[in-house]
Length: 176
Image: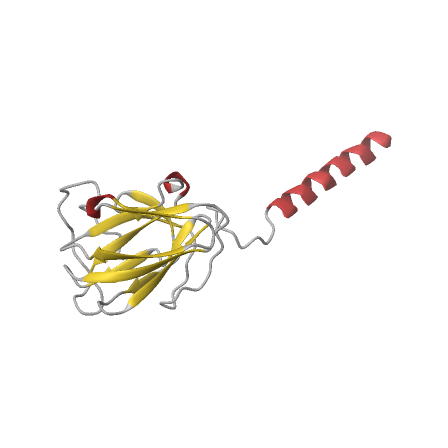
């Protein structure tokens, strides 16, 4: 009799643990919540951008003459993908809304801005002629803090496949 009660208790505890473990967290496996972006799309999950895993927080079309805000947070960029007309220079307003130091780094353009928590900076970036250019946080790239600047947007349509000429462009395009 005691043995039967013990088995039932163990099974009940296992079921409770299983149900609780599968419960209602809205966080993805990357630890970031799915949130709406400025472009109206849903963020969340991970995407591969220019060969780098990135925590996805949406995309936005950028234009010259307009500052575009890019949020640096723990551990993602929002928006994650910036789309624009090939060859245009655009101004980004970087805001570290995270609790730790982050960088905005683009190797091919020689850009590396360090921002402590609450700090802001502005940078000018050039939209690539084709494909996508990677940007990342040099401290948290391995945690998915990366994004890309894409040749394509409302004026030019989406880019096709680019040519691999350096580590910031890619020969495949994941539909950004």
